[in-house]
Image (tube, rainbow, N blue to C red):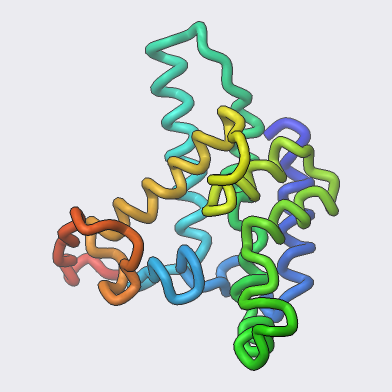
Length: 192
C-alpha cells in the first residue's frame, strides 16, 4: 500500500471519531444494519476477508494473463476502505434519530457507501479509492465502475454470499441473497 497506508488509517480514525464507536472491532459484523449478520465476529473479519479475496482475484488473473494491468495498491486500499462509512450508518444514535423522523433526513440520511466516499476524499485519499467506497455497494449500479472497484465489489459480495452459504450468517438476515442458497449447518465444536 505504498503511499496509502497512513491515509487508510487516518480515514478510519476520522470515520470512527465521528461516531459513537471506539474502534473498528466495535462495528457489528453486518453487511447493512440487520442484513447479512454474522453469527459471531465483527467488521474486522469482513474487511480482512475482502482485502484477501480481492488480492487473490488480482493474483489469479495476473498469473494467467500477465498482460493485464491492475493497480494493486488501489485494490488493497480500496478493499480496506470500502466500508469506511459504516461507523456513520451503523451508529445507534444516528439510526435512532433517523427512525424517529425519517421525513427530516431520510433513513439513513446517507448510506455507508456514500458517506465512505466523503470520508475518503476528506482525509485526502485519491478519487480512485473514494470511487471504490461508493461503487462497492448498491449505489455502484448507477455509475461506471473502475476495474479496481469491480474487483473489490465482487470480493465484497462474494465474501457475504459465501459466509451465508457456510452458515456463518443468521438465517433471518439473509434477505436479498437469493433463492438458490442452502446454508450449511455449522460445526459448533470449532467456535472460538
